[in-house]
Image 1 (cartoon, rainbow, N blue to C red):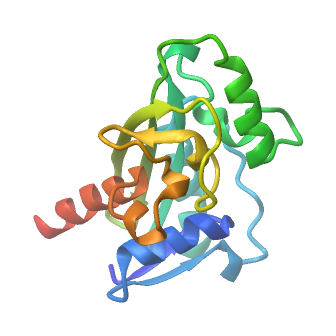
Image 2 (image 1 turned 90 degrees about the vertical axis):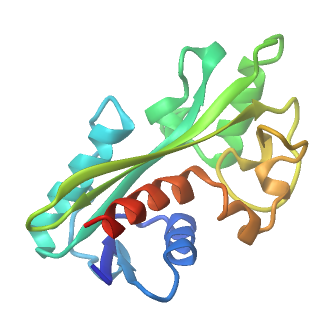
Length: 192
């Protein structure tokens, strides 16, 4: 399993995967397969979306494929933005508009607990399996930090006062929900 296709065209995600997997793995992505059509995320859970992407992509390339779906789950917003994290502020959403809308929706909210969830789905000829990681924390009252992407500048991990955007890439990649899901995968792989 040293060669892995990551089902993403998100450069930030790809960089994070490469950093976490390290040099032991040859990680490549959908950038290497420009003719494969976009896979629409129609699932209602992170696991459904990651499974859909991994199994669809595997049909095209017939190689070990990893797909992930991840997002932010806010308790007081009934789990929103959830699977709609990337499109939270509408069809023309971007990271900035998503953060702005989330902060607006939480102006008078006392319970600011939230978690990032990442579900990774591994698909190969003989394996179909999901792995999940969660990073728990709280939503800040304002944006802080310049690193990261997505909701990083408004998410404070439990036990810290900094947002993820105030972490270095190395620090973040040691605690992120994606890191935790990958560790779950690697732990499983090492028992096989």
